[in-house]
Amino acid sequence: MAKEQANWARGITMRPGDRWYTGWVYLLPGFFIFAALVLYPLGLTFWYSFHDWAGIGRPVWLGLGNYLKLFQDKLFWQGIFHNLQFVIFYSIIPIVLGLVLSSILHQRWFKGVTLFRTLLFLPQILPMVLIGIIWRWLYSPVNGPINQILKAIGLKALARPWLGDFDWALPSLGIVATWYFYGFCMVVFLAGIQKIEPHLYDAAGLDGASALQQFWYITLPDLRREIGVVMMFTFITALKVFDVVFVTTRGGPGDSTLVTSLYLYEKAFKQKAVGYGASIAVILTIFTILIALFLRRYQERKV
Amino acid sequence: MKRFLLYAVLILFTLTILVPFFLTLLTAFKTQPELAKGVFTLPERLNWQNFTDAWTQGHFNIYFVNSLIVIIPVVILATLFSILSAYALAHLPLPGRSIVFALFLLGLIVPLEGLIIPLYYTLRSLKLLDTYWALILPDVALSIPFGSYLLWASFKGAPQSLVDAAVLDGASRSAILWRVLVPLSRPTINVLIVFFFIWNWNDFLLPLILISKDELRTLPVGLAFFQGRYTVNIPLLAAGATIVSTPLIIIYLIFQRQFIRGLTTGIE
Image (cartoon, rainbow over all chains, first blue to last red; front, side, top):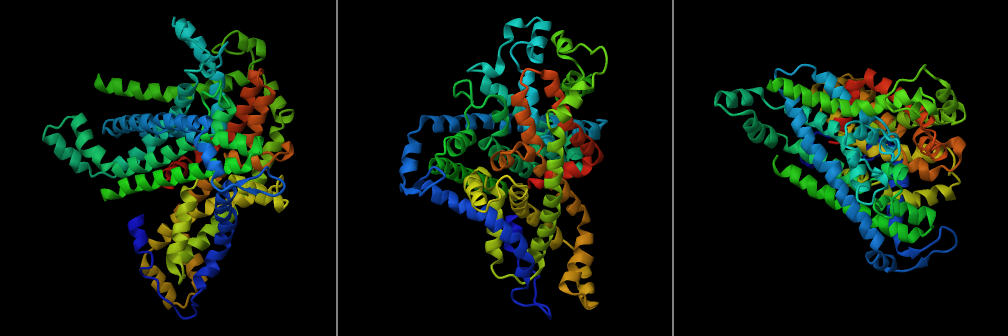
């Protein structure tokens, strides 16, 4: 997109009846509401973050006070660390699974591509809250379906209170995210593979390349763009995970699944430490933008 | 043999997706004693009581109507404004075009968390908290950058010869947009509508923070609070989950092509 952006002005000419501001007449309604409800609050977040404010009364200027406190806040760092662990489950495992499954679906003999694609993509259209509620029940300690299955197949020793276990709560929530995202990754990759010239595979096949070699030398390099896009999207989603934690563990047990967004929510809206919450929001925003720019650069390099 | 194995892998993965939904549906038809007998046993008869309880006592009737009241203006306004912005960006003289592009790009990347705190206080000072506007206006604002980008690419890609022909016929700027570009971009606009619908319908953080009255809650937030009230009554909870998911699944199966195109092109 960036390359296209450089040419944004191409082919735009003044016509009779145009004024220099004609474009703004069309842009203004959308841009105004965007500026008022996205850009303006975004700027205010920075402003708030330099103050001590409880939501009422006069904010007190703190300078960098909130940030100094934040960098020594163990819970904040724990939240960041949990978000980074979630990247494995939101991004890395679904991408690997998506690559494997899409290469299977792409085999010429494979029948029923549309059916599998439709079903594997299904979780994507449902609210994460709903997914969280269903999985919370699946994981439930006493008569949860997962523990029942484990007992039924003789693996009773593996049954545990998944979301109530300090070591297992985070990976258990991570698996929910993997379950939610791998079909999505597969669909994006499949669309990418279908754009690859079929004769590349034919030629490789004639040269005696195995399916694995074809995957490694043709599919993978050609999917770099799709992988980059999916990586950016899922990575950012992992950094701001909120819904699924909110309806399952609320950060617990202890703080073992506390994530940055939840900490922000608790601070800014429950404890009314508005300025402090804003400083968390600023760090999260800057972090997200840096990741996006970095992954974008990676994507563009190969074009 | 190899093919058989690969099919088996696919079927296994598909089952992991389907089984949780199937169990939820099955459980929604059970009584609590029936559920205690085991998750996989069938209920003696289809018990609709959970659904009627969830619908009325669980307030899903109210949440459903609220979701509709919010989503209809959001989709209409977001689509309309995106069309207008994209046209300005793609075809019209526009001082500051590159700045607008950069700001929309920022709007695409920035997480909602980055602006939700001041958004709450801004809407509070405008006395808009706990109104439908508190959801409609931010939803539209957050949708516009994505819609503008997607349609900008589509308008830019329209055949120049058609636009030139319309100009020769004396078409005005607005006639070119509505008679030439919009009809040509119909498939992209459909994708956009589907995307705006699913994105805003499933939204959680925004309504959680901006709405505190139960009678104004939308479905996802309503479902979360419903879970808080009925944690132990799993069949009732399953009925609530089924009520939320069934309309979405039906719409998805009808429009699955647009959904898949929308959500895959959506992230690019």
